Image (tube, rainbow, N blue to C red):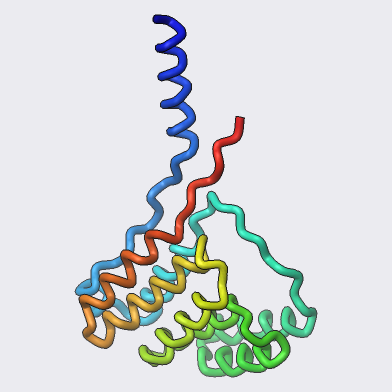
Amino acid sequence: MFARLTVIFLALLLAACASTPAGPAPSEPAAVATASPAELVAQVRALGEHGHELEVQPLRDPQVEDLRAQAQAQEAAGKPKAAFDTLARALVISPGDPDLLQWQAELALLRRAWKQAEILAAQSFELGPKLGGLCRRNWATIGNARAMRGANEAAAVAHRQGESCTVSPPVRM
């Protein structure tokens, strides 16, 4: 009897350790439609910072890193178009980089270029890992862009798709 209770307790303990926190919930399409572009981007980026997943980052070209820093400064200065163009130059050096494409998608949200944001996020998803923070950011961007265009049902589908990007870490003993 004691052994059976111990096994049940350990199983519950391991299950609790393996679960991940829920993280920010995707926005309802109706709420997204009233949000500012800056609020949309903040929500997208928050979904990418879940924090309990292993994410592999490839080595980056130093030229691309310089352009990323430049784009970050431009975005912070309130120049999303200049940052977008800087990232386009980085994509010439590192074509198909899903992180750069997603960043461009987020900048397109800031510029209210809803269709462009959706297309870039979809490209990033196709080229990316399809799991983890980048995946959640992809689907949140797609969902937010659709909601801003009034495609609420399609936005809800995208937000639900983003929920499948989270993978629980393996149980370690």
